Image (cartoon, rainbow, N blue to C red; front, side, top):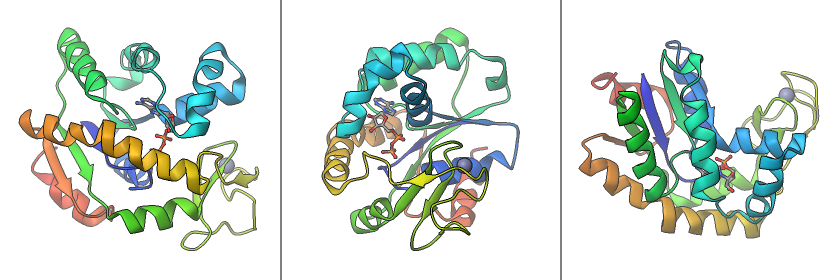
Length: 211
Ligand code: ADP
Ligand code: ZN
């Protein structure tokens, strides 16, 4: 399956992507993870992305399209992919459309996780992330077994520096201004499947007719 996951930060896109991956061979492609990896590794890409990311702003469409054009043509994408955090702007969506048509590929659907704002803020301020493997925890709902330590790989888990209250406010505003218009875009393309939850069962039910 080839699916775009759409929804504000904290909607649960990453969690749903990991759950859906258990169902077939699809790979999760998270532009946020790719960029955080580049920042951690200190690559040229990381240097270009770091300031915007820390502020909770978007990195440029050019930078993202450069990454995705290469990524979507790698071998592991043949079985399908779950795009998590991309596209984020109308120009990215237009560029993706052109790229897929060039590659003669088609999306199955765009899954929108339409989660209320108060839930989003609560989730983001309590979220913690492993600095090594990216596993996500929540101090209220999904604490690690040992405080501050990743269950999966044993490295340190921290609050991301774009998860301060100020940066979160900004990320939500950026989402509303730049990313929310994609809902209409994909509705017009006939691809939109919208669910008011990120619980796996209702999401699977909503997807059944599409994948
Ligand atoms: P979130 O949890 O807010 O969905 P991500 O992990 O997807 O965050 O992304 C983290 C940051 O990486 C974003 O705030 C933004 O700076 C940058 N980023 C990720 N994907 C994109 C994209 N498609 N376009 C522009 N910037 C992006
Ligand atoms: Zn880890």
